[in-house]
Length: 625
Image (cartoon, rainbow, N blue to C red; front, side):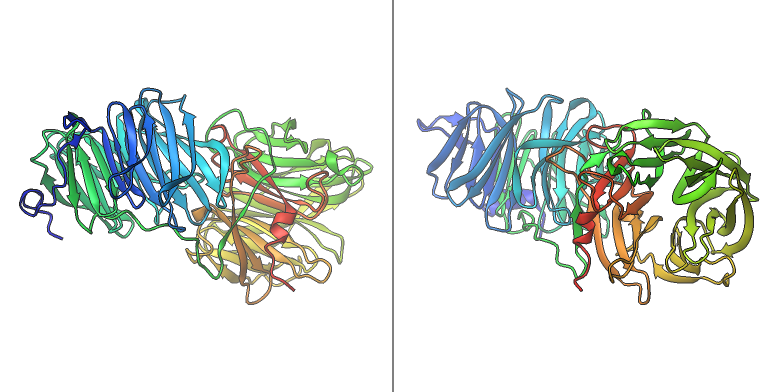
């Protein structure tokens, strides 16, 4: 396409209108213009009008509406959103032909809205709106999930944006939110609610970049092009996607406008509105809205689980919660306990309401694991172990029949940077072991012995992987150790203390199904003739993968843990440590639970915590017999 805008606008008769005409022939200032497959929308100082393609008024809404945004749907309908500026109220409609299929409106109380942007996530099956406001404030609102609209929009994320944020647009297919920082810069962010913000710089003000004035509006086209409308002098900047980034291509003056304020894209028409209410429309097939987002088609689709319980958040922000372990109260499952490492201070203990009932201030811990039945102080108690990074030691804990946790043996290791840990209890010998690892790839196996009163630890074997490991888990029934090498994949070793020390890399982090870092590992044990499966956290894309535990170690399911809109519990992100149990933990978790670390606790924005998912949700993803 030739982007010689002056020639196109003037001599090729693609200038469709300069001002709207009122019924008595006088001119009316245009505030915003949007052409959709359902007909054009136009706002003025008094109302927003929707017309059919022949110009007949279909519906009219009183108010001052700006920032009209449309999103086509796979069923042929179109979504339209707008902000009524006098009331700071969000309005949205789903249009099908000449009728409003559904609509809604909601007061925006936390910010004064400057722009709105639709986002439809194919993988997570969520429809949301970004609200961009003053003073660096922004929110993401969920409108629909699994094709079902919520009774009212739900705020699912608060955004930290540049103070002078003025406009936004979204690449629906790559999940990128584009943001204009006034006249200073253009930015790109991850649009997924549970993803890291992934902020990338696109362009800056001249002379270092191409910007020469304030960007007032953004639109993303079907041709993978970002259009940025500059206010004064009126310019249209064009950026083209190249891989995972955007590259500036052209800057063209809009000489017919003294200043530019609004930009509307749809159905082959680019509408530009000045601050004075002058309207310019450029008609060209290149100006098309992005195609409708279709459901993901994959041989291993990304499934969605939802938490039904979360623990209280830690009181401070930043990286804190790392790894969980679960203790079942066999007599009263609803009195079970969740243990979690707080990397800054110690081990937190939660009940099955998510409340913290204990905190053991043992220092900077990292990973934790648990087994049952080892005599201590004359009684059969249960054992937990955690790596202590402050002094490169392992701290053992004794757990009594009521779930009360207390410190027990602490033993030194030769490590210089201790990291991950898991426990192993041989079904054949009944012996309990600790596997602890160092960032240099060394793994030490310690035998934990009891004389009835106290515990002791003795090194019995050394293993090695080439680079930094962390998460590990054992299959006690089959005497196997699975160890995650963070950037590489998952190793399998024999767990028996007398076995060979040679391991095998059985699952690779391929960047597609399993995306580094490989963090938490957990085992779904074999039961009732059904095979065991290995659950791994795929930190690079905030997901989890379920693998076979024997050759060919095939991935059988992958999933994310997304928000539970009904209970108001957000999903999980960063996907660090995790645990899985098939033991009953009481009401709602009768078959067990999947317990995961949430690195970005969104609803509300708080310190990290744990999310609990009923195991039944995971079992439904398993292959049929």
